[in-house]
Amino acid sequence: MLRVVEKRKIWFTISIILIVIGIGFICYRGLNFGIDFKGGTIIRININKDFNKADADQIIKKYVKTEEFETTKANNKELDIRVNSEAISDENSTKLFNDIKNKYKLKDSDLIERDRIGATVGNDLIKKAIISLVVSMILMLGFIAYRFEFKFGVAAIIALLHDVLITLSVYSIGNLPINTPFIAAILTIIGYSIADTIVIFDRIRENQKKMRGKDTIEIADTSISQTVGRSICTVTTTVVTIACVHIFVPSVREFTIPILIGIVSGCYSSIFIASPIWYLLKNRIDKKKELVK
Image (cartoon, rainbow, N blue to C red; front, side):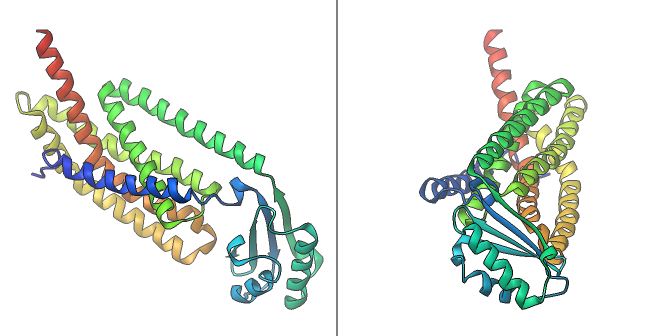
């Protein structure tokens, strides 16, 4: 039997260290918000054939500094250019497209999109993302509290917050850009992580009936041992699938990177964070009941 709950201080310490380092980077450098949040210019061009992205980048560098833009090669035929706010004027963006058009012998109709996103739109996205996150967690807390017990719900929400903080920490340490796909990934991670946590909690609830008189730590560790194989197999198959998508479909990497981080973190929190927190909450409540008696 695994001794997960007994060694909870180790798991908590690992998570706290990573989160504290991430918060330190956020305070020192801040998060690297992408164009979707800071505002800027998006240019999408249909090259109509396979092309060398490095050659296109050299053209872009004539008008924009290297650190002010990022490019993505979509379907081997489309060039997606994202330029940070105020880094390029409308006049230069037109010149940029004309240079690419001349190099690859394109038509004016091959300019799929050229939009400028304002910073106010980015602020609105941040507010809506936070609201979505809070509402989803409140609904999950209500469902788990109704389906199981309130302390199960609290433990699950803390584990979900852990996953969000771990993902943000990795992004802050790696200075990875945060765009709209990141928000979609975070909400996906929450759904995935809560499903894994509920499986363990359901086993704990069953074992509380089967193992009456046993210590709470033993019940929790037994439940984790019975479900850990399933959790690891599920996360492994999911990670392998998403990793393949990440490698072979570059256009979706802004979504797959946080998904990969979050799924691994979600598996870790379901096993090593949620159940130990449930034990601490239950133990505290049981002690209060004994004092009342």
